[in-house]
Image (cartoon, rainbow, N blue to C red):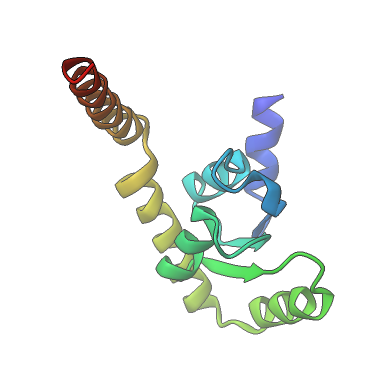
Length: 130
């Protein structure tokens, strides 16, 4: 249930998201958005080419570990545990800020609107030249 999930998120220090390289360009792990909406740093296990990985590294809100790299995963967990409380708080603040500047519903709708308008222009241009 959503209420239980929200309660659970209040008890964790970091969210873990995993993805396979096969989904690059096709999908994005939705848990990432739920975590940053709740101000959680994220440990992403997956390809660095994904937007999620770029958001994490570009905004300093967590760690990115390649699939199958157990040592990197352990190091990321150890690094997070050793991170000072104030820096963890800053990671949380940056995560929340990223969500509000890039991923709120209105921001996403605006992006789709732009995309659909561009697509419409392309379709109209193709019809003119047929």
